[in-house]
Length: 255
Picture 1 (cartoon, rainbow, N blue to C red):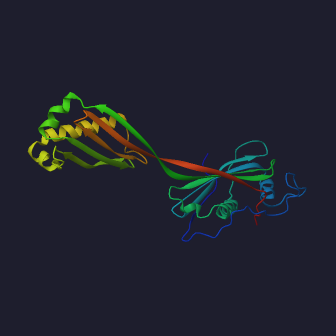
Picture 2 (picture 1 turned 135 degrees about the vertical axis):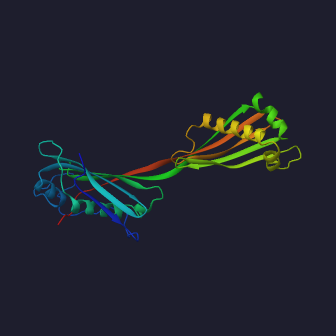
């Protein structure tokens, strides 16, 4: 089913908000249904709705909300126009989450309004960037030992970084037995040998972390230590995680 209603708002300045929910209209004793429907519950009854679920999201100062599901008194999904309601629930999110639309990696959630429960439940998630560090060690294969000797390598370091489906090698360093970086000389005098070593490290990375450059991406460094006959991969994977919270509003006034 397509969207029945949606709104998008662009905010130039964050609004001032409080951290507590606001009670709108007269609802009777907490946990009981009032004799007279008011606010959003009167609005639902007028539209013969039993339940409505709204999804919302925010990023870069913009907010968007739409009706995900609307259930009528017969238990059937229906489409409904709800622009005023969408504006109200976005305002309530504003009051409870300071600058939520400016979260670096976005935030959003869902709002469930149920006539039987007589409450409005906001479930909110704010995304943040997290990372995981992993290391992996293998012995130097015989297939590149000759090339390492040809380019005069005592140690080799290859650093990489990538995200959004695009990755690159940020540095390729060849250290000789005197501690000097001889990468430029090696690539000039023995390009095939230098390329063979780098290609082996690229293949090692792709085999260990397929898709390392996708989505939030990853970064790291691969070290070759000829004296220890070892290759060490130090890898940091980035990923989105989220903090979840919820709050309940007893009513919203819709005029």
